[in-house]
Length: 102
Image (cartoon, rainbow, N blue to C red; front, top):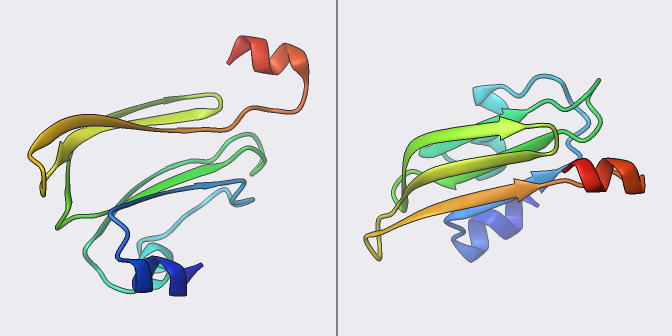
């Protein structure tokens, strides 16, 4: 995954099912392959359903976020196009009831 992010010059990446409760700055720097990365982590429940949204701080200007069970919404401006946007990382559980709630 690190190779793809670096080689493709990604501006924003959404990762689902990280299976971790804690994400560190060092881990994000390692995944992104530099320290110009912003990120928000939703740990899910006991690591399951966890989400990680990451962005290149030179391409996306973060302003705020909101999260709940199964989603992270990141508000900001795509710097290259000067367009305000919301990037949403969504994880729907496997049960129909949980999908309806989401």
